[in-house]
Length: 204
Image (cartoon, rainbow, N blue to C red; front, side, top):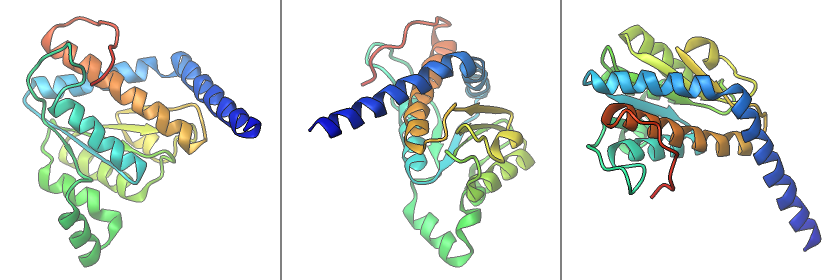
């Protein structure tokens, strides 16, 4: 029991350290990303998201927060956010007929329009299908945002805004990405519907 308790203690302590470091390094980029998305929504455009594995789940989570709601105490209209990770028929058809590397780029080609925004989530910053999606989005005239880890990878140099979590541990990067996603949603909805910057309340 002691060994397990110590492991939990070390894991949580490192997770806290990463988030404390984010306060010093990531605030400006989080706010910049929120501004890009809010501007797109205000102009009648939409948000697309892509990522693999746990990052795919993050895409669906973030899209749900925008189209449904973030918190119980802030009521506002639904916002157009689409996770490109959700359609299993398309994903498997394209991967089978072509390749998996182009699967998100194809989704961007089909659904993206100039003025839309793409968020690519990759703990390594080097996920090939996310990189291709970002390049496709930029070719269309979309704005691009990346959520990556401390190594930054290729994505950080390709996008308009990169939020790089100061860690190389996948688990801690993913834990921090979720906090970033909630913060972005918080500020986007308040820019659009109240203009206030209230303290983040507990999500539903």
